[in-house]
Length: 557
Image 1 (cartoon, rainbow, N blue to C red):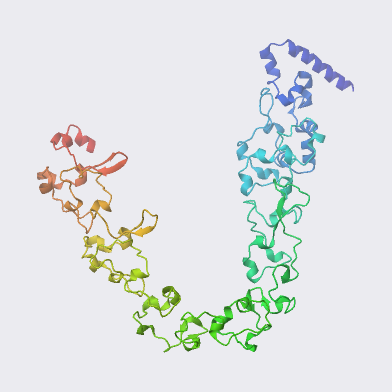
Image 2 (image 1 turned 135 degrees about the vertical axis):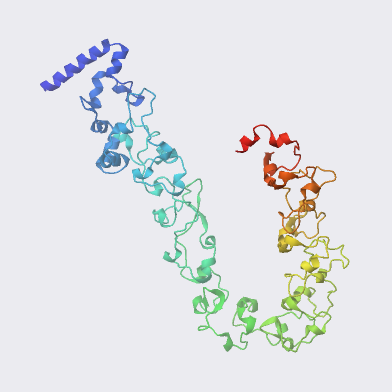
């Protein structure tokens, strides 16, 4: 007790002496003003609130005031437990003082945006990495009663009080239907879709065609009975409490109860038409299903839904329309089979006897594609391909002598490959020579968009000059000549580097003497103009001084 009284008297005397000191003398004792949150601790008599005489600031003294942090440290959780107990850091490493009233008490070592959030015990993943700190650290999401531990705490500035579970920040879109462990189905990348969800773990496992059914077909959107708004909505998707004990809970009984309620006795989830042969065998009826009849939906024939009611099936016309309009008789089986309408019995109908023998791909075309009227006897025009086929070339060949007939290039075996090759190309305005012979057709004949927006491959060109396809590497040096100098004056189609150019013939500057052995690049150097680099050929100065001026030899060395 006596010792405490002695220390107190010493502090009072020191405070009195401190007040008598000039400002520069006081600075030697107090480093500076405290930050605004700690301003109430200002004064020499309160130094020992945070400091220990002769030992500096003490973490335990900080925790005496900041009980909201002390509680976490004692429970061995949170950032401050890691920093103080595991990494053995001092409070003032991050919270420096005596720097003035407006000094920010938190020092972020690498900046707040680069803070290592894993130190808190909650690693930021997916979209959590991209959001601002205060989008999470705000009063609305604080679940702990921090005011009870620290009445003066500003909930708008603190980073404490959050929980790790999703629903502490996010509203429950499922309204209690499912477990609160959101990560079972969702990821941090995005809320939708739910890639971790596995329907095979649900009470109703998806098999067959159920796997391809849209979720919304079974899981309807309903309104919350209590009119609770979550994310501004009272509507939510119903995932639990759905009836699925029998097929009739979702599907209408097309048999109207004639075969009982156990649909699985005949059907499977692979498809309504996929009848389980072990349960129902149509071959035991008076009309065994053969060929394409096996794939027909039951209700297409049993339209009434009563599968016990007898059907007429004596003739094909009982179900099928006679597209021949009875001109070929009523016995369809004389030409056709149940394997397909186009599967004509050999020898019964031969299209080669008509005015249009079927060849190539025409053999595989559905009869109705050509006989669009439904009558197989009514003549069909076939004098030109254009009668049935659209001109894919957009009329580019109409000016040709044959009017652009397709047969000149194509066959019935297929649109590609064509009959048109290098040999035929020699007869055009642009015979292929040299390197052009090795160039792929589509490198020149490219797809273009017409005025109507349709894509069209260009085959007919207005211009066939070199510049129509090739960029001018000389940057217009020779196009300004009158007459304009064409590329072919110097270059060949065999190779761009193979030149016809003869300096003493085609240039104003004749190469004599030592000039004959000078490499071209010594005089014609690359220059940069208007953002392009190219070799300068003209105009060139032809005086000796332009190349052999004073100091030129030294500059070359």
